[in-house]
Image (tube, rainbow, N blue to C red; front, side):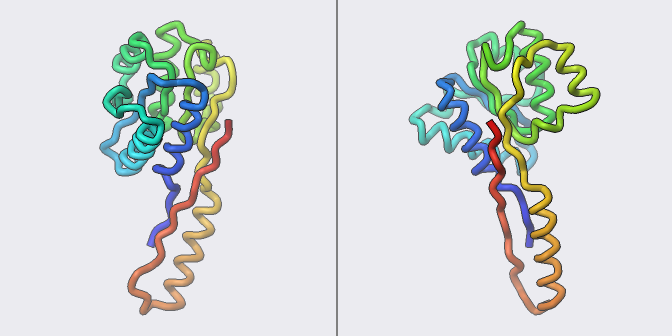
Length: 174
């Protein structure tokens, strides 16, 4: 069995937030070689489809500053960041393009409160961030508790053939 954050549902919710802010030229930033990022990309695309926005009009880009800068210069007005690594690259590209958040574009993604210590100092120096980023928080503590419960259940009933699989919804902070 396993306990994971529901990345697809979370990415859909985050993308719906961007759409509710009036964004229509969206981009997904993240390296989808990882299954968790593929799942998040699917949620991004689910929200686009529900809003009647063609998927091919909203690029999926790797976490590379040059590609992100190109998208920003091309008029992207909202970005879903698939990971913290992607978020750092996006913020550097935003600063390099002279844009400000949230004045010039909207951003969201997973686990942004981890901008602390040297990362926060770097972001402050970049001057791109004018307000806290809205973000999706994974229920890490609950995931740990539920995983431990699953383990204890499996130890008590070793004959169980298919252990449960749990997906916990992340919480949106915006």
